Image 1 (spheres, rainbow, N blue to C red):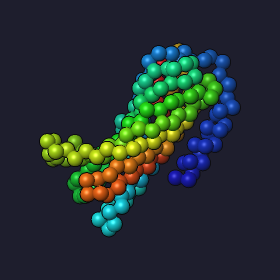
Image 2: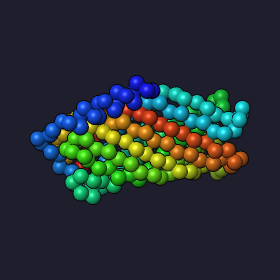
Image 3: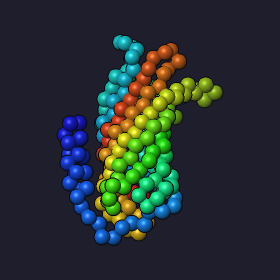
Length: 190
């Protein structure tokens, strides 16, 4: 994980020095879809009966939607989620929904941050009682940066690094927290 953080930091620092002669046309509605791979850490404070897991995996959904405030700033709703095992054959989803402000420091490099909601709920793959779905809601945060590799008119392919997390309180008073560090590729349409 330390190597991934160091590599992402060095890449973004080097890439931020690059210049772009063909600026992308950023205006109006924004939609982005991405695929990220990274480390996910989920834990709670329920002692020996609790969950503490760190896994590598792919985050889905990895979505951003919103609108441009100016040519260098956007208001976006971001979403990321993972599935993890609570007990044998019982899976849960931990998802984050965060409104963020994304700002371009130059024509290719952007930074983003915001706070929102986290959800912890039984996975659809379980035989769960949909009349009592046991959805837990809490806080979430999101900080990310990216470098636009390819810019063509209204379309952009970018490399992203994200640090996101959140926490929920379960009905029995147990606090469950999650932290995600991912590196991925995104396709953006402005």
